[in-house]
Length: 525
Image (cartoon, rainbow, N blue to C red; front, side):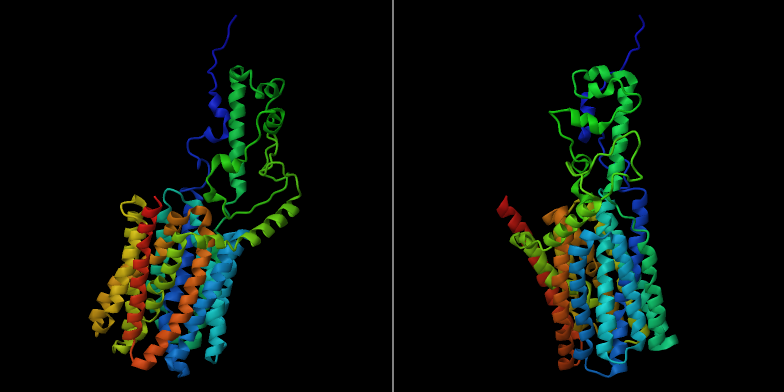
C-alpha cells in the first residue's frame, strides 16, 4: 500500500507568537507606506515650523508697524507659547487617544492657514494675539505632535533616523521661509504677505491626508493570514502529528477551512490569546482605539471573525463610547510625576525649550541691533536651517548606532547652544553673526530631534504620548513667561545681548539637569 511521505508539522507553529520570527512581517513597519508617511510628515513640518522659524522677521515688522515697546510686542510670542502648550497637551493626551493623527493634522492645518490669513485685518496687538498667538499656536500644536508620534508607529529599527529626517523639515523650512517672507514683505507689503503665506499653510491639510491611520485592522488582517497559513499546513497531510490535540477533532470532517474560533472554543484547556499580545509590541497600539463590527469587509469567509477583546460581544458603538470615556479619564496620568526620570525631563524642557525656539526668533532683532541689513538678517536664519540639517542627520545616525547615550547627546547639544548665546556681546558684525548661526544651527535644533527618543529611553513607549503632552504644557508656560522678560530686558538695556545671555544660561542649566539621569540610574541599579 502506497503511502505518501508527509513532512511532520512542528507543533510549535501552533503557538501564535512563534509563527513568524519577524513580528512586523506583512505590516508597513520600516517599509512600504511608512516612507509615504515620513514624506508627509516632513512636508508638514517644512510648512508649519518654517513659518514659525521666520516669525522673527515678522516680529521686527510688528515693532515698526504698531510702534509699541518690545515688552508689549513680545506678548504675541509669549501667548503663542501658552497656546502652543495648552493645545499640545490636549492634542497629545486627549485628541490622539480618540482621533487619528490624520484628522488632527488636517484640522491643525486649517487653523494655521486661517489664523495667518485673518491677520490681514488685524489692526492692533490684541487682534494679532488672537490670530497669530491663539489660532496659529493651536494649529501648530495640532500639526507637530501627531506628525512625529505617527512615526513611532510606522518605524521600529529606523525610528531615530525617521524622526531626525522628519524634524529636518524644520531646518528646510528655516532655509526657505525667511527669504520667502522677506521677499513677500518687500513686494506685497504686510497684509499681502499674510494672504499668500496663509494660502501656503493650507497645504498642510493636503499632506495630512497621506497619514493613513495605522490601526488594529492592519494587525487583524495579518493574524487572519497567519491562521490561513496554519490551515494550509494542516491540509497538506500533517494533521496526524497532532492527533491528540483538540484541533484534530475540528480538522476531521471539514471541507476546506476549519474555524479557528470554534477550535479554540472546543478546547477546555486553552483560551484564545488576544492577537495584540501575540504579534506586535505595544508601540503600534498605545494610542489607536479602533472598534469594528463583526461584518467588517476585511473578514474572510473561511475564517470566523474572532473578537479582538476576549469575551466581548458588545455593539461597536457601546464599546467605542466606553473606550473613549476610559481614555478621557486616564489622560491625566499624574503618576508620571512620581518618576524622577520624568521630573528630570520636565525640568530640562522648562529651561531647554529656549534653545530650540526663542533664540531663533530673536536672531533678526539681534542682527538689526548690530546694524545688519534686513536681507542679511533673513540670510542668517537660512544659515541656521542649513547647518541644522547636518546636525540632525549626524546625530540621528549616532543615536541609532547607540555609540553614545542619547541623553548625553542632548545634554551636550543644550550646553553648546547655550554657551554660543552667552557670547552674544562678542558678535558685532555680519561675519561673527555667521559663526554664531553655524554653531547654534548645528546644536540648537537637536532638542526636538532627541526629545521623543529620550522620552522613550526614560519612560518607555506606552508613556510617550501622555508625557510628551505634559512636556509641551510646561515648555509653553516657560515660553509665555520668558518672552515678556526678554522684551523688558531689551527695553531696559537697549539691546538684545542681555536677553540672549538669559536664553544661554537657561539652556546650559537644562543640559546640566539632564546629566542627573546618570546618577539616578546608577542609584537605582
